[in-house]
Amino acid sequence: EDIDIMRGNVSSSGKDLLDKQFWIFRAQILHKLFPSLGVIELTLFQAHGFQTEKNCQKQSYNAVWNNLIVDKGRAHAIRLATIEAFEVESSRHGHVSDLHRQLLKADGRNTWDSVFDIASVRGGSCR
Image (tube, rainbow, N blue to C red; front, top):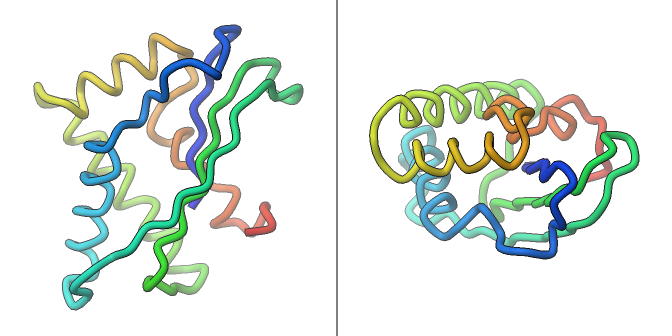
């Protein structure tokens, strides 16, 4: 799973916007989609820096949910369900709503649809 945060021209070496609560909420969504999985283990890779294609600083996260193996169709459905859950939660007052405001303040392109990058679902990345 590719997760990208645009930072405009602000250095991405600063504070990560995605905190532990973000990852817990993400795992909760996966647990709802796959209730038979007792534990979902996350291995997280990060790369931050300037992206010339988008002409901005970017924080990139590659999330590997180790015991979750899906085909392309399910990956697409999981992404859409995730975006929907984050959008619903963003409409409420709370941590996800606050985070979404921070993401949009960092760069107006940080909609949930952009944050949960479709490249890995489409096969446009090598992960």
